[in-house]
Image 1 (cartoon, rainbow, N blue to C red):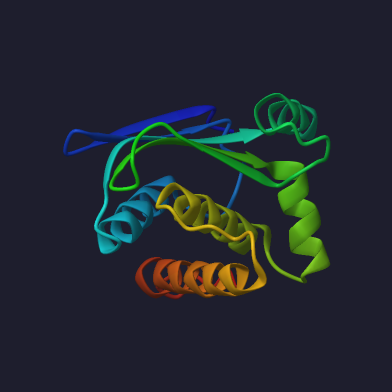
Image 2 (cartoon, rainbow, N blue to C red):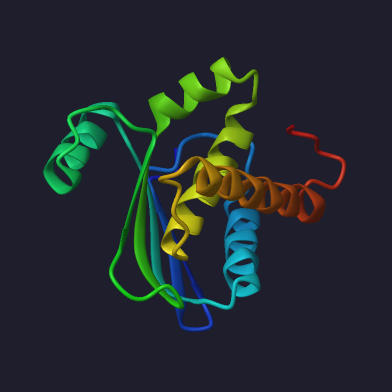
Length: 157
């Protein structure tokens, strides 16, 4: 497992921490994230995507959001929605559970979670039924973009 992977993209930094073993090339993820953000008219100053264990995710949820329950993703933005300086935390154990529950690959679940986090960072909310439906459509759009551009013959769906 590659613990830390850093890349500088024209003075913008995207990095992964504790990246799990997946059939997703990090270089493809970096291109895809950059494309999705650019499509929404935003720029990345610094974006951290952190894969953390369930107990650490619960601690973050309690400490920062005062929620005493497990979750699969948390996002923290430190700038406005057009200049991304943010962190996304993904609970890999929850991602595995979600993938199994929805008969999905872990790779697609990770793409969905990253998409979800990016959309929150870009200012989307999902606290009503209508907003949740809109976010799901946008997640699907982002995931489809990844597959169209980066899975030449390598189906991970």
